[in-house]
Length: 614
Ligand code: GDP
Image 1 (tube, rainbow, N blue to C red):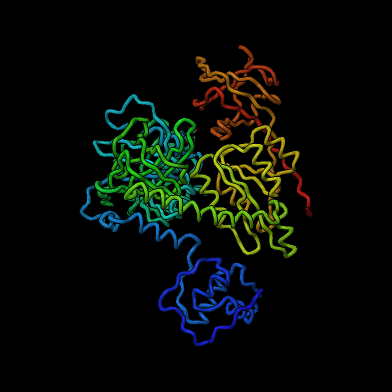
Image 2 (cartoon, helix red, strand yellow; image 1 turned 135 degrees about the horizontal axis):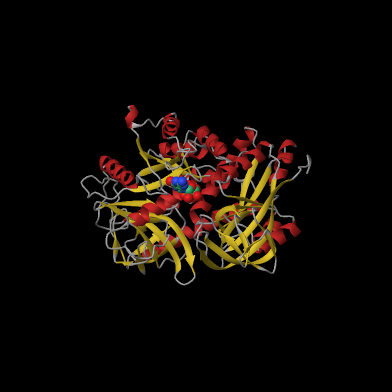
């Protein structure tokens, strides 16, 4: 290292606030404060920190040096500084739109997110509300799941975000996207307040979003509405009827009771909230969901939050950009324009945007392209830095604690696959929060879709653990993982995942339950049988399908349903097992949405004895 001359102590520091990127090196930091790299290195050496001029400095070190000089600095994340400049470029001439003051603007429909514990009925509630309240004139169309939809009640519209899940809600918020005006908290009356109910309450409170409580499943014999209300009240949501200010609605999603009252209460609350947004001018909003469609290219569902989005507009969403080729509503119908609170699919973007990305209409196409490519550039740079770091010295979840107990810092390399952009974002965001001094987390790869052989190959190369959220490995991936000794952990509930990660961090990973796949069948056809309901005609491809065994239904590698094989037939006969190479009929009980091409996977859970040392 060549050591430049030392700067005299009285050399003036820059006036005013200096913006410094996190993880700057002494070489970057020194000159910004009118000092040399050697000044920084020497100073830190005196503090007992041995660093080179090209090594990234911690926040503490940077602040320590600034404090020594008496300089006023602001630490920003890499890219943040450029981003501020890009924002300025985009906002040319839109001061009227982006001054954040909506007073006097027209009213807009409320945007609602449904939250609650798993299995308390969020999905069914969303489906039933939707089918019973389609926007006038739209009945009969084929609904598409685009991540959000609008319903109409007494001529007033309500927008529902159709991706229930707290972490998605929080991940959006973490990215600065406050999409939700009202949270509907679903609590099953037969189950009461559960961990994710509390989690949902906390998320909504943190976001300062008002909550309407829907006490669901009141049709159940063991429903106890009073007890459920009391349970919720314990968490600070006291019912109006008990003198509090939280609205409670008693509903049964299954029997569609109380749904109208629920919508009325939401509208009432929306009125109190006085939601407004300008309906004119360049549109802005947030990406709710995005994927690559084989026929149509990148497709993003966006929620317009202000202004009017029109076909032909030049837009930027994160690092994606383009001219809006078409706008489609949740029925797949073409729209010419979309105003505030409208969810709409946008075609014509250059790539798949990320959930939570803000989108905005640019002054012109040139600016849109420039902003997107600048963002892509620094995003790639910062992820390259991360990945390179991640690839050095990996560890598996079980190994982590041994290394920590030996006093070694450990890096846990992860490959994360999830069923949708939103959940991927959520998993990454939550896992990242667990990072601590002794455990670094490196994301080797993140993607939407089932776990494939190539993911396993990558994991083997990078010594990474694969985390699947609502997705499963296919057979090839499973076999390769076994051969290569790659760990795959799949989850369907975020808090289970976080619990495991926490335990691994604390060195107390519970005995692992290993799932052994016992059979695999492909769905060929769906039959309706009187008094039995839907039956899936399947061909058993591997292992055997056994009546009573646990089963999950997979579509494109993603879990769409879980339960048990309740009835199993060969021709008309009830049978106990059907082996590979034969056809069979699998009863679907209450799950109806199976299609040909889906996969039925049966499995068993076995506990694996854990060895104490790796
Ligand atoms: P989610 O995990 O919160 O999305 O829950 P789902 O919507 O998937 O519902 C879980 C289960 O509860 C499903 O089997 C539903 O059919 C059932 N369910 C939902 N709402 C009701 C209800 O009001 N009454 C009854 N009896 N069952 C319900």
